[in-house]
Structures are given as structure tokens and as C-alpha cells.
Figure 1 (cartoon, helix red, strand yellow):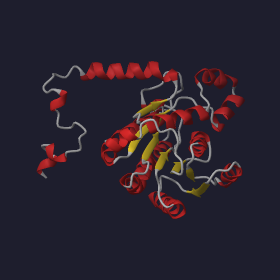
Figure 2 (cartoon, one colour):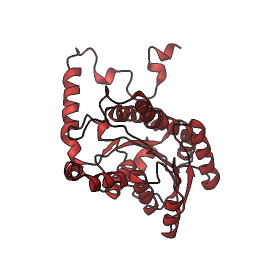
Figure 3 (spheres, one colour):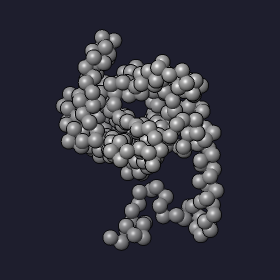
Length: 296
């Protein structure tokens, strides 16, 4: 807890080793650029070859490497982690950003497409946390910066009313929120800061292509869109400040607040049988206080 407080207000990552999955393009590339701007050395992990991106960044003075890996394959993630540690000597920050999507309502999206989204966005995100956790714990133990940033979405905060259904993607991003909360509980006591980035529409390469090809899409997206660089700046500002959920887009507020209010209305139907301060699951990490786990 003390280490976490000491980090409040940090704005750079001078000489830190930052891993960004899905870092060759889009929000991932914006995170890479922002990490470099703050003084970090970066490993890009992407399912596609990022060598051209690396060459460009090196010409700009960055210390950056890349490796090809599919986060849905835990063996690939283990190899990427080993390569990072061999090249840089450790890992201080993991941006768990790789993701994919499938359009359609639950009853319409094909099972193989849904499986692909869940494999990458949920199982892949878990693989990254599981594999890189020992390196983050080691950094925290010696007093280096140690952070995990999971890329969720405004879809983690509710069901956005201003986009066409991408329901299995929404499901996957709800799961990323759960991964973030449990990672905060599991890794936080060791001094690892854990946050979730929750952007809305972001003007990545793919989104810009959609806008350019379809005027209707442009009219629907542009009022809500942000530049990737703005999202990345807010991501690292929030991560280093200890913000648990880093929502970047003001247009997310209304439906996210409505979702939270509806959830609280339903939960408040339960009778009050214990005070919050008396609840054993208080985040202290004291498993012995749990009547179930403590007796095992």
C-alpha cells in the first residue's frame, strides 16, 4: 500500500520495460508511442509482423523490439515473455491490449466467430496476466514500477446505445472488467497497480477506413470519436495515478451511469444483514478470515 501511494503523480516511465500486446496498430500502437514518449523501452507483441512499425519508431529514437505471438496460444505468450526478459532483463508494465470483434446479436453471430472473440479477448487476456505476473511481481519486489493495464472498452461499463450490436464483443469486455478486478485483488497487495482502459470509439486505422468507405458510418461515429493519442495519454495518466477504471470518452458517461444505477436498484432489493465494514471479503487478502477458504 505504501509503495502504491509513493507512485501517485508519476508521469513518466523512464527506462521502464513496457510490453504492449496488439501493439502494431490502433490503440496498441498509440500506447507504444505514449510509453516511448515517457521514456520507456518497449516490446510489441502482435499476431502480425510489426517490423515496419519498429523500424519507424527506431528512426524516431525509440528503443523498441517486436515479436509475433497469438495471445490465444499460451505457448506463444510464454515465448514472448521469455524474449522480452532476454532482451530487456525484466518487465515493469504490461499493456494487455490485444483484441478482436464480431458484429451481430447473440442469436445471429456464428459460434466459430464467437469462439474466436472469446479466445482472444478473454482467454488471451488471462494468458497474458498469468504468464507475465511473475515478472511484474519481481519488479514490484525490488521497488521498480509494476503495472498491469487491461484494455477493456466502454462495452465493459454497459451496453452502448449508439452502436450496432456487437454482442459477443460486449460480453468479452465485461469479462475483461472481471479480470481487472480479480487481478487487482490478487496482484495489488504485492505492489502491482492494476487498471482497465475503457475507451469508446477511437479513430484507429480500421475505424478511419470504415468512415472513409461509408458516409453513414462516418455520421454515426464521428460525433463520439477520439484520437488514439488522446486515449493513450489518458491511459497512462490513469494507470500511474492508480485509477481502477480509466474511461476516456465523455459520451460513455450517460449509459454507464444508467447501467450502474440499475444495478444498484436491483441489488438494494436485498435485505441489509451486515454492515459493509463487517464483511469478511473486504479486499484485505486475509484468506484466513474467510469461513470457507480458512477452513481448508
